[in-house]
Amino acid sequence: MEREIEVPNPNNGQPCKSVTLEDLTGKMADFAKERDWDQFHSPRNLLLALVGEVGELSKIFQWKGEVPKGLPDWKEEEKLHLGEELSDVLLYLVRLSDICGVDLGKAALRKMELNANKYPVKQCNGYNGYNTAEQDV
Ligand SMILES: Nc1ccn([C@H]2C[C@H](O)[C@@H](COP(=O)(O)OP(=O)(O)OP(=O)(O)O)O2)c(=O)n1
Image (cartoon, rainbow, N blue to C red; front, side, top):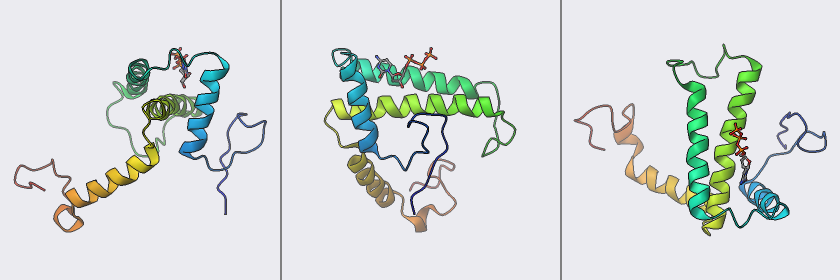
């Protein structure tokens, strides 16, 4: 069954279906082309833009201390803002990958395999590899 996400109006008012990295890659390419912005979307510029958006994302959490998972006490507008900043990070990351000729989905799956090999379940159960000097996993 296709998952539906309720969003304000990015899809002509229709609820959107699941989004793939390919969808986002194509939409970002169209977005840049329509505005003649390919000239600005160089690897370095996109990386700097990405880092800037990570900074904006960090500001949302800055000074709040630890917050419970699911952000139960946050107002809807705060969560909306969070979604916007997360999206900016994702969109620039997707665009940077595309411009660099990296298939991000494929690269991420490969990296997860590397992670699983590096951190075998049996050795890591309950340890994150950093929380104790004795656990060199
Ligand atoms: N040259 C650009 C400028 C913007 N964007 C797109 C990607 C991001 O999703 C978003 C970033 O837009 P802004 O630079 O306006 O940043 P914000 O949306 O965070 O606005 P502000 O910095 O005012 O909070 O727009 C882009 O692809 N290329």
